[in-house]
Length: 335
Ligand code: KG4
Ligand code: ZN
Image 1 (cartoon, rainbow, N blue to C red):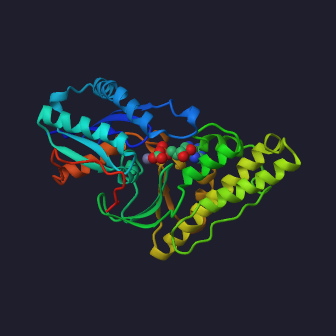
Image 2 (cartoon, helix red, strand yellow):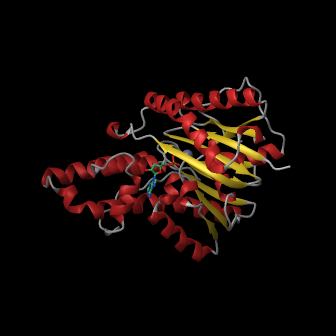
Image 3 (cartoon, rainbow, N blue to C red):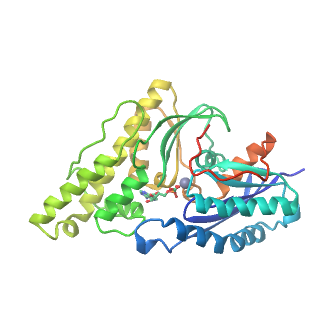
């Protein structure tokens, strides 16, 4: 019999639902919340309200696009955490209600694990064990992936996430939230060696990005004092230089982790993996180290429910279900 999973993602500012049949994505509907734009960041209360508005139409659309009716669902998978608590409560409550109404099992999914399992949607798929650099607006982790569900975080940020570093730098340059994609766009036209900023220097595989942001802020303040038009006149070089700084820090640690663990299968996940500078730098480093690198399709890099469904599928096969007393977790360790 086929395994058909409906999945729900509501951890941050995307309301998403997907239908997966025997590991194949039949639909993946993502409603992005635009209400946060004018505030320069995600406003948790507004996110929860928008999830509440979006969730029923998004789930309906996912079922219609997949051509699947509710009675045929095998299970419901939902993001339990990590994320914004109020936002997670909407998806969790919806999933619980549907599981009760349809009398089908409920599967909790860790959002960070799902970002990694997005690599198992399309070909080519990484081979175990592999290292995954998960870089998003909320997280930056190097994960040793031993099997579909056995993963170990070996390095992570001690302060800002890489996406946050991009977004905060973009904000200093006067760009709208989330500014990561705009930095990428301007960086393509700029000279990345023009400006140098402090690089984070912490030991091991952990990251720190708060110092880079501060160094960038003071640099800009000083230059603007001398030339109020400094940013607009140098926007491309500024974007290219700050992008280079963040990307090099990310890849240096990944290279060290790969070498120490003797691993050449390298996967990149999360919204920041869309960054073209990161892709280019990793490709160069991969050539040098004989890495096989894996980037999921862009639609599966940013937050989406298809990745939640894939995680749900592997958990379904292990009969890994939860009861209706499950509650969301703002912080949820990977393993
Ligand atoms: O994984 P994601 O969609 O959501 C979270 O779980 O956080 O990642 C969103 C992050 C934002 O910080 C956004 O600015 C960043 O990914 N991002 C980028 C690019 N596309 C998205 N950062 C740099 N360059 C990009 N092309
Ligand atoms: Zn995410």
